[in-house]
Amino acid sequence: MENTIVAISTAAGNGGIGIIRLSGNKSFEIINKIFIPKNKNNKIKGYSLKYGNIINPENNEIIDEVLVSYFVGPNSYTREDMCEINTHGGMIVERKILYLCLNNGAELAEPGEFTKRAFLNGRIDLAQAESIINLINSKSDKEAKESIKELEGDLSKKINEIEQKIIDVMVNIEVIVDYPEYDVEEITNKDALNKMNEVSKMLDNLEKSFDKGKLIRDGIKTVILGKPNAGKSSLLNAILNEDRAIVSDIKGTTRDSIEEFINIDGLSLKIIDTAGIRDTNNEIEKIGVEKSKKLANESDLIIAIFDLSRNFEDEDKEIMDIIKNKNAIIVLNKVDIKQNNKLLENELNKLCKPTIKISAMDKSGLDKLYDKIIEVFSLNELYNDNEILITNERHKNQIKKAKENINQAIISIKDNMPIDISSIHIKQALEDLGEITGKNVSEDIINEIFSKFCLGK
Ligand code: GDP
Image (cartoon, rainbow, N blue to C red; front, side, top):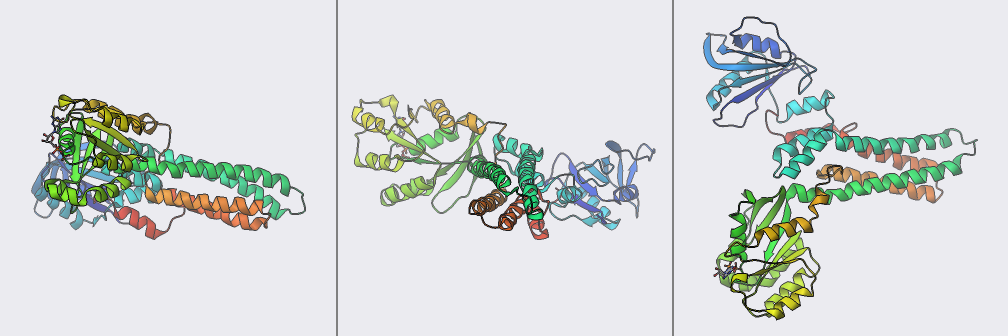
């Protein structure tokens, strides 16, 4: 790129250190104007650090004592010459240094522009660039791991492998189009069909992996259901206060529910807490089943809590109906004052759902609940490090488009349509996949992707 960009890369506010980053062919020229190293040896070496003062060259005022790291392109994040100024941190100093860079020939970077340059200069592909945003925004261990896998290029490799298979088919088809006098059509068609079925299956698997990826990315949407006084709030409080479940975030407060993120052994649960409803008992009665049904239908997991100390009632029956066909764990609460409630237990047994007994009040049995959650989501399967999971909606949509084009091509070959028709679909599938890694992608899409980055990344 022609211009040299600069940005404050650390989060705003007071911190232990602050980093101002420069990238572009004037990086070293600019740093030479505003930085006086203690060691006067001015030779610039890549991957090296120099200690000294940032000064205002107009009046020699010392702005801060800093460390400057040097990266000589192409061995840098952007592949360009880069410098990172490590300051003592703090808004004023960081801003002063930023302005010094701007006054001495740098331009303010746009959000994500460093990473965009890494992409445009060919160091990483588009899928890898997007994984960097995912990594930064990760809410769980597992999500961070998936992002790192994408950053390392696992998804890109898989896409390239599929593209190669499609190109093989293309080559065969071109033979038919170019040399119609040879009688190769029949054999080639059979071969092409086999290969394309294989490709279609691979794309289908990748597309389906998005649902799993979504659980990892967005958290398992969990709803706690139970009749009034069964112990829903007590259970939620017990979970939120317990060591094993790290409460990572509280967000998305809507009119009548709060989403609380908790992390259990690296798995992220998004617990939809109907807190607004919880406060007023009358409201529960009013909204009751309808609201629960709606929440339950949208959830990935229901924790259905039943009160062992009370009789089996219609409300219990209603909850049983709601969870019948859903991913649910039955929690029998209040074992501490357990009365022999065989009718309830027998009825629940008929549902054949994983069932555990707890006392939300004593906080006993929570470990069993977590183990069950992990079992239900066959976490080992989620943790399969060899599998590639699609976590990005844009990628999923491109994969879906490519699959549909391949399926169209399969149909047209089976229907003995002119080979050019399937060739159009196959080429389109290649373009769809190319948009994932960015081989062919419009500038608008590139700009949209990088605008989601933070400044200085
Ligand atoms: P919710 O209406 O379902 O949210 O129920 P709460 O969590 O507010 O609990 C209702 C009542 O049951 C409260 O008085 C709790 O103290 C009590 N409770 C909840 N869990 C237990 C438990 O495990 N054992 C006993 N003995 N009481 C409990």
